[in-house]
Image (cartoon, rainbow, N blue to C red):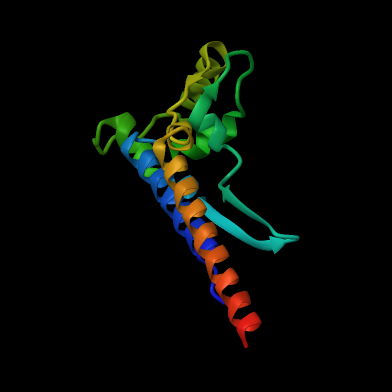
Length: 162
């Protein structure tokens, strides 16, 4: 028997992943594209009648979503690596062919400012998780459970009638 519940969960989770990725792009939070590409969903098979659905993405998603508190400087090497991405370099040089004179000194200045002031989050995930999409998925799952129960009851009734 095919389960409508599984299809409803998978469909809703795929839509959620697509919205997360779209939010990253629309808010200009794409450097390497790794975070957007890492967004996946998993709907696990039921164990003792329980289903689970998860959204998985690289561990720094929450810093992009919520920002970072002031206090300590982030690792300078990560910022040096970030500055190497063409999308970042083009934004900082306004598309000119100029190259940075000293990537390390720019990275250090950025890290120092982040340590002093923190960063502002983009809410790319929060906006999806707090949107109507969640209640829409809940409604689809509820409808699917009802259909699955109806099918099961019909199958039982057929067995009893035979």
